[in-house]
Every structure is written in C-alpha cells, then in structure tokens.
Image 1 (cartoon, rainbow, N blue to C red):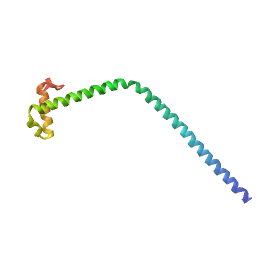
Image 2: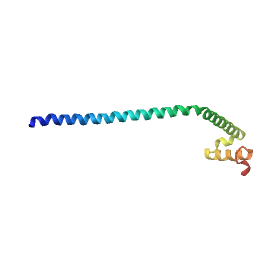
Image 3: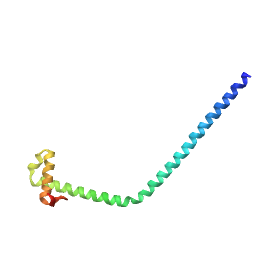
Length: 108
C-alpha cells in the first residue's frame, strides 16, 4: 500500500494549490471592484472642478498682483535690490502696510 499514499498526497497538494489559487482570484476580483468604485467616485468629483478652477484663477491673479506690487516696490528705491532677501521682504511687508495693501493694514 505504500504506492497508494504517493498519489493521495499529490491530490491533496493539488487540491490545496487550487484552493489558494481560488482565494487569490477572489481577492483580485474584490480589488478590481474597489478600484472601479474609486474611479467612479473620482469621476463624480470632477464635476466640482469648475469652482476649483475659478479659485485657482483668483489665486493666480492675486499672485500676479503681488508680483506687480513687489516690482513697484523695488522700482521706487533701487537700493532695495541690494538688500538681502530677508530684509527685502521685511521692507516690502512694511511698505505694503504703509500703503494700506495688507489685509490687516488698519490693525498695524
């Protein structure tokens, strides 16, 4: 009977391999379903991008305005260009406060 034990062991190993392959396949199906849900949710959120784009446009225009003000600040006194960056920005903040361009300009 020792000859009968070998094929039985092979059948057990084959069955175990098939069982684990089935578990892997089920895991892949579940991961694919999750991925489809995530993609669907992301595609729903793209409808709100109009407001985000408007906000981005506002920030870009504010940034351009601040750059223009900084260039004006440097043009008023050419010696400001020779200051260290830290000192330039401190003087720029003070200049903006004096001109009333800061949000908290009235608070000092």
